[in-house]
Image (tube, rainbow, N blue to C red):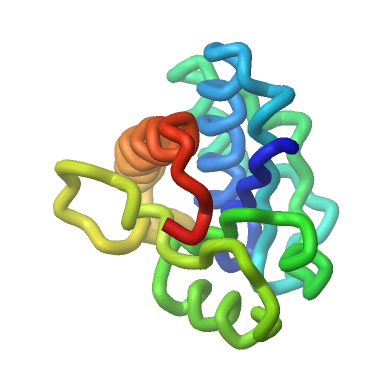
Length: 161
């Protein structure tokens, strides 16, 4: 059975699609696409159906990640039936995740950067209102965290660990 990972930010146009694209790329590179499934969502519905922010797509493309096929969607209660990991980009989004989480959910909710070794951030900062450097920082943090998350999953630890 595949391990399913969902990345969540506010509008699903900057941080979570970046994490989605980076993690999916890493999974494909390792030939693990049958074993690890990736998706992303937003806590809000403002951008449902929209492509990722152009700045996020450009920054990701410069590092070899393609986000063009991704489209924003909103986090739903059904996501708790499907995903083993539901990881927020910041505490506000994690609070929404926790408020929707049913008592019977057996997976893991938390912040993506809980998996990042050697970073001085707890949250992935929202780059939406900033410049290009914000999107580069998001990529730096997401690449580290996704690499460490992938190591965690491949080590055989389950989501509850």
